Length: 274
Image (cartoon, rainbow, N blue to C red; front, top):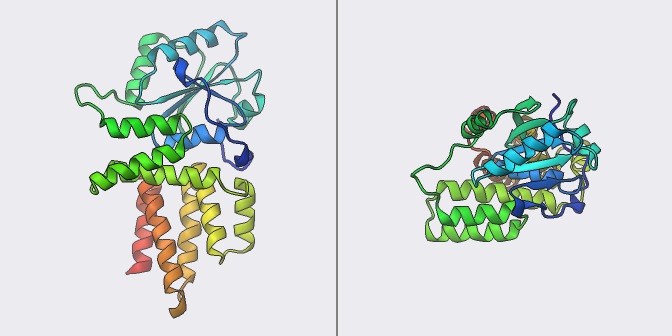
C-alpha cells in the first residue's frame, strides 16, 4: 500500500477537523494533511470506508465505541472524498491504517471482531491504566486534536515555564510548532520542495521544504536536506547560518524523538560538528 507523500493538498485550505465530539474525526481533502500531522503527537487510526458496506459501517461503529484519548480515530468516506482514498493508495473498502509520525505503520483490510480491534489498539496506543496522564499535557493534546494549534503551543509553553525539564512537553511543543509552520506556509508542500531544490543554499527555503517533508513523514529527506546544507556552510562568515540550521535540526529531532531516522541523522550531525 502506497504511503501518502504530501505535496498535493493546499495547506492554506486547512480547517479544524470535524466530528471529534462523536468519537471520530471526519477527514476530507481540506483537513487531510492536518490530521496526518497530528500523528506526530499521538497515533492516528484512519479508516477508509463507505456507507454502502455493512462491514465498513460496523467497523466504524466499533472504532467509535473504542475511542479513547491515547489515539485519534479518523474516518474517510471514500464516496464523498475519493481523492483522499486515492492519495492513501486504498484498493478495497473498508481499509484501516495506523499512522505515526506521518507514516503508515500498519494496515488491514475488511472488518475485524471487537476483541481483535481492542488488541490492535492496545498495541498501537497502550492505555494509561493506573498511571494517569498529566492533565496539562492532555489539555494541550486535546487543543491540538481540535485544530487549535496556537492554543496547544501556548499550553505547552506554559508547562515548560512551570517545569523546564519536561521532555514530553518539549517534544510536543516542537511537533506543534512544526505543524503551525506548515499550516501557515505561503506555499504548498510541493512548491516548497521545488523552490528549495532550485536554490539549495537558501536557508529559509530549505527550512520550508524540510518542514513540509518532515510533516509528511519523509524524515530522511528532511534531515538530509538540512545536513547537506549545514555541511556546505563552512565559511567563517557563515557561523550564524550554520548554528541556525543546527537549531532547526535539533528541533525536528525532538519533534520526532524515537523515529529510527533520527538516530542516523544525529550521527551525521555529530560528525559535522566534531
